[in-house]
Length: 241
Image 1 (cartoon, rainbow, N blue to C red):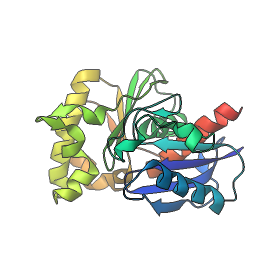
Image 2 (image 1 turned 180 degrees about the vertical axis):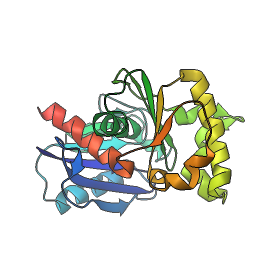
Image 3 (image 1 turned 120 degrees about the horizontal axis):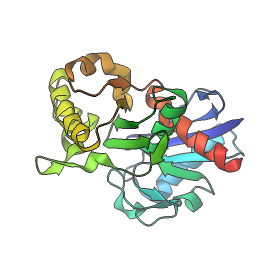
Image 4 (image 1 turned 90 degrees about the vertical axis):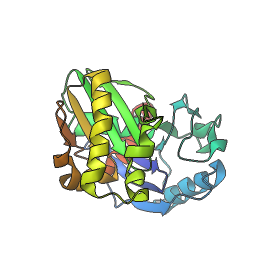
């Protein structure tokens, strides 16, 4: 079964049909820059463009960078504030809408590093912000938003996201120091058995992950930056039955 997965990020919106039984993209993904300002209707237009590009008529799963409950957006830290209260599922024509990190985590738990792992597994995605997905014995605790934990009086993602690395012109080793500080805080709170790191920086894990030293085993996401697309498609496929 193929389902269209679309991943909305702070800098880009990307999508592709997904073979949901194999957990792989069925076609090359299409990426379109996120509109600025990233208000609901311009973003919805990009979602439509991606669906039209693939001549899609079947089920669609869409990720959103914020808290989503029953298809309705509750927070919007890295997109326009006008999203709050919007029924995104309706806006996207009946698509299944899920928090972006939750989607990535679901894919990674099914097809990647989290597969068959028991205990507490934490997926963290480093990009425009820091997304999180928390799993207890394979069951998702949705909308954790751990990028907004406070460090040094500000959201952790303001210091340790990939955007913060770029904005502050940090080398990988210096950025890794900030990531390690953040991870130690998360480790203290949740005592996970495994941490999986995703987002765009997962492709460059060899540049920074060796500089991070914590007690918990930590690995780059096997699905890298495609995890959100795959997880969104998975959820929509499950809903479509």
